[in-house]
Length: 112
Image 1 (cartoon, one colour):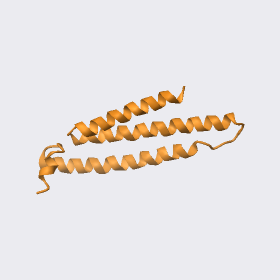
Image 2 (cartoon, one colour; image 1 turned 135 degrees about the vertical axis):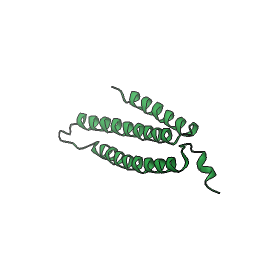
Image 3 (cartoon, one colour; image 1 turned 135 degrees about the horizontal axis):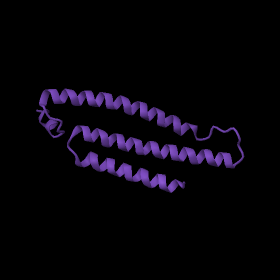
Image 4 (cartoon, helix red, strand yellow; image 1 turned 180 degrees about the horizontal axis):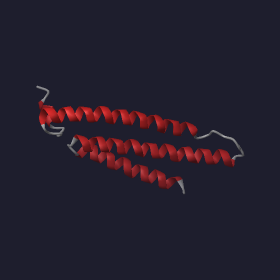
């Protein structure tokens, strides 16, 4: 499958995530959109890793580790995303307990 398909899909997913973050007021949906953006970046990293590995194999390197670095980055991004979700959801639960709402605009009123 050509790399263009992966790039196009990742761009669509990233744009959906950005649109969701900018237009929604629900904190849970905003976190889901951030995760969607992180997963689109992961998709691109794995796609370029696969392409780089295929080119190294085509160049004649039988035992190559080319393209492994991007997959390691994906692993670390997933670990950081899982930690971000755990902390973010804990904050949302505490906000809901205090305000009985997960509306982000309500947090502006807490500044005063």
